[in-house]
Structures are given as structure tokens and as C-alpha cells.
Image (cartoon, rainbow, N blue to C red):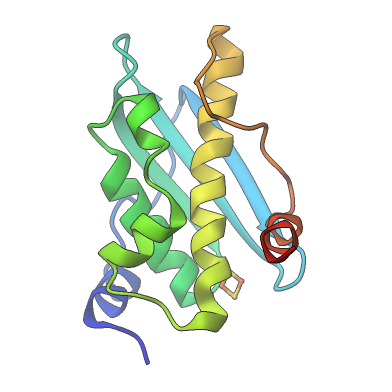
Length: 145
Ligand code: FES
């Protein structure tokens, strides 16, 4: 039911850990399944993501998507990092079972929350970035409507 890429990122997650003195930190959860994800970003003076790390207290798909999402945003500008949507992460992983799509949303939103934190701390505006939500479950219902 899981692709090889998902299994690889679950068994050997990239970028696990935290960044001391991170430029931005974002934490989001999903009240329904109880999973929580935290993303740390190190962003340089040119607004390029130099490093990204994550801590995920969640299911295998949440771990695989956090791993892939951090891999995909490293080296990108903060603006480009916004294009790493949950769909892009899922595609890079070769897909996820439908019941696990919400896990990828957790990864996307944790990145957004960390970018928001960075923008707030530095008084900058990242075009298209929405304020973070604490509970990603709310977003899913919005999408369904
Ligand atoms: Fe909740 Fe995967 S089951 S994040």
C-alpha cells in the first residue's frame, strides 16, 4: 500500500532533529489523529533555506512527508518553498493512500508555520503565505466544502 519512496523516507528519514537558534520554527497538529509536527528552518540573508530539520510525533506517512518536504525546500528561496505543496510532496513520494493524504497536509502546514515565524521575526512579507493554523484538521474540512 505504500510506495518504495514512502518506505525509504519512513525507514531512513532525512533531516530529523532540530536547529538551534533557527530562523523560523513551526508546529502544527491534527486534533483528529493526535499527530504533531515541528519544522525548523535556517534561512540565510538572501532568504534561501540553508537547512531544514523536523520532529514528527506521528504516523509513518507523516514522517515520510516531513522528510521529503524538508529535502524539497532546502536550497529554495522562501518564496519558492511555498510551491512545495502537499501535492508536490505526495507526487515526489509516488503517492499516498487516500486515508493518508491529511498527513502530507501536516508537512505542508508545518513548513508554512515555520516560514510565517521567520517572516514575523524579520518583519517581512512572504507573498501568498497565510497565517498558520494550529489544527490542520480545520483546513481539511475547508477543502471539502
Ligand atoms: Fe495523522 Fe498521519 S495519521 S498525520
